[in-house]
Image 1 (cartoon, rainbow, N blue to C red):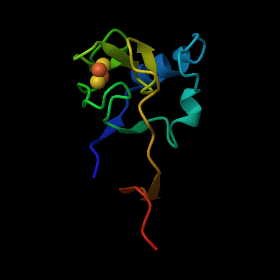
Image 2: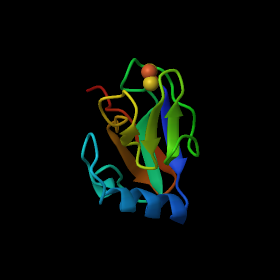
Image 3: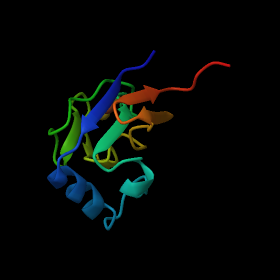
Length: 109
Ligand code: FES
C-alpha cells in the first residue's frame, strides 16, 4: 500500500553511498546495513518529513532523492543529508526469492 523505489545502483552510486558512511549523518546508518545486495537499493518512497514522494534517484545535492516541497536531500543510500526530514528513507522488509524475484513486504500468515 505504499510507493517504493527499487534502484539498480551503478558502481558510482554504490561508491558514493559507501563514501557517505564517513560523514556525520543526521540519522547515522551504514550503507551495508541498508542493502542486501549493494547493486539493489529498496526503499519506501515516502519522505520522512511530511510524507511526500521524493523525486527519483539522481536528484538533490547528493545524487539520491530530492523531496522538493521543503527541500530534503537524500543520498544514494536513501539517507537524509540535508533539509528538514528527520530520518532516512525507510528500508522495508524484503527478500530476494531467487536471482530474478524480489518480494517486498511480509507475507500474511
Ligand atoms: Fe519531504 Fe517536506 S515532505 S521535505
